[in-house]
Image 1 (tube, one colour):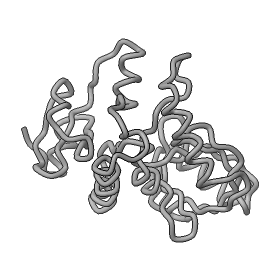
Image 2: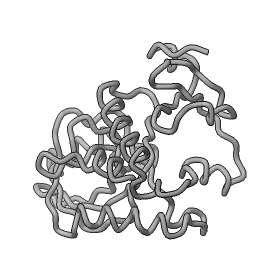
Image 3: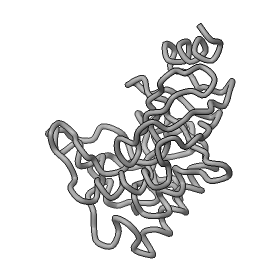
Length: 214
């Protein structure tokens, strides 16, 4: 088994950051605005990659979708990442519970994740632990899109994570923090925080470790 693939398998099993290398891949398919399939340049291994910090409208979630906005977000990512494009997955990536690489896609000097937010095709979405500098940069890009009514924000649009909860008839469990004030809120009070300043925590300890308090 190639070294890169062995390392990925270990990281997948342990759910630890893929910090030992930066993976170079060729884009095979864009599923929606925040998920792509790619193949490794050196190992020919297929990878499913989820854009870190970005949550775009659902094309198909348990046979429910978010309509034209979801299609527009998918097509925007397809325009940024045409089939065959060679990109790098940043070395601060992780592996999520679905076995997907959760990372930043870098096309030359362009951070594709940040660009999707700047164009207004997704919502910022970080669950602790996270890199404070990266969250602030993405928050600024997202706020810029909202203020300039780009992409989805020509009008109001339901947040994808709230859409998923509604479809599955669930309530939010993650605590929500205000990136600017460091105030912590229960899930039912999420609307008190501006969209671009929301970050999420699995529990109070995770929030307190980053300085967030009720």
